[in-house]
Length: 226
Image 1 (cartoon, helix red, strand yellow):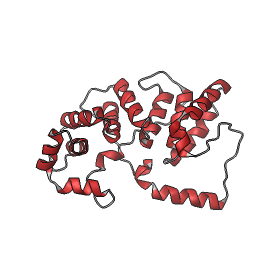
Image 2 (tube, one colour):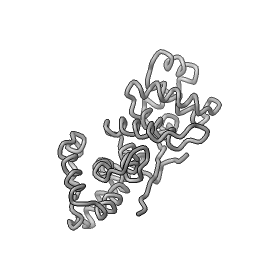
Image 3 (tube, rainbow, N blue to C red):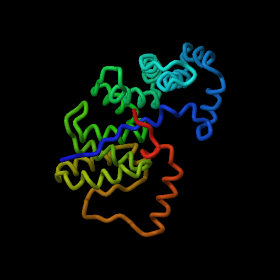
Image 4 (cartoon, rainbow, N blue to C red):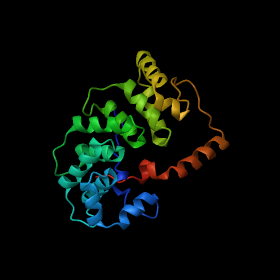
C-alpha cells in the first residue's frame, strides 16, 4: 500500500517575496538585517521567524541551518505557527542536520492544531506513512479534512484513504471532526462515506477553481522543497 507524502516548505520564502506578501512582511524586510536582529534579540517573534527564513535561504546573510533552526525554535516556543511549521519541516527534511521524526511530528501538530493548513496536510501524511508515530488512519483523515479547506490535493488524499479505512476508523474520524472547533469553523462538509458523490457541476468546479486561485500561496504546486 503506497501513500503520497509531500513535505511543503512554502513558508521559508514568506517574509521576503515582497510582491505577493503582506504589509508586515514588507515592513520587516525594509528594516534591514541589523534592525531585525535587534528586534529578534528583544523577543519579537516575527523578527525571529524572519531571521530563521533568512538564515535558511541565505538571504542578506550567509546560509546557516543551525542558526535558522535556533531562531525558528525561539519563535516556535512562543507560539508562532509559521516558525513551528518551518521547524518541523527542518527536522524532517533539511540536510546537514539530524533527522528527528518525533520532533517534526510535535511541531507539525502544534501548527496544525492552530489552523496551519500545510502543517495539517503534512501531519496527516505522517500518520499515514508512520513518520514519527504509528499509523493512525483516523487522525490522517481528520487532518486531511482540515487541510482540504485550502489544499485541493487533500481532498484527493481523502478519497484514496477512505477506500482503505475500516468502518471503525471512519467512525473514529467522524467523532474527531464533530468535536473539532477547527472543523466547525471551516463550515465545510467532508464526505465520510466513499459511496457518496460530491457536486461536480460546472458552477461548483468554477467556484472551487476560483477559491484555489485566491489561496494560491498555500497550494502544494507553488511550494518549495528541501
